[in-house]
Length: 122
Image (cartoon, rainbow, N blue to C red; front, side):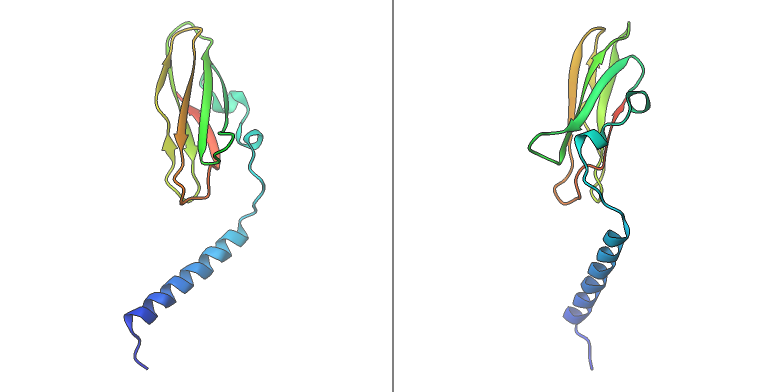
């Protein structure tokens, strides 16, 4: 039996789909909520900033970091999203003077599995 390119392609796609299902079933999954994504402030927030992180209320692919500069000098920060199967993304860099507040947002690609982790980068 001669294999055509179409048959070879379907076989490769079928194998990839089976592998993907096996990997998905092997990884324990749980509901990801804004509370589970927000880590303790000491572990994920640069010194001198107090930040809240989370997902957008109506878009599970958009994350944010809302920060206040409690230090004595200007601070720059940005949000970093771990996006599962899609490439990770960084939000815009925000510079805050002492006492100021600001927000950085980023958006994971729609092809992926959504936001897996949100961190604040200095």
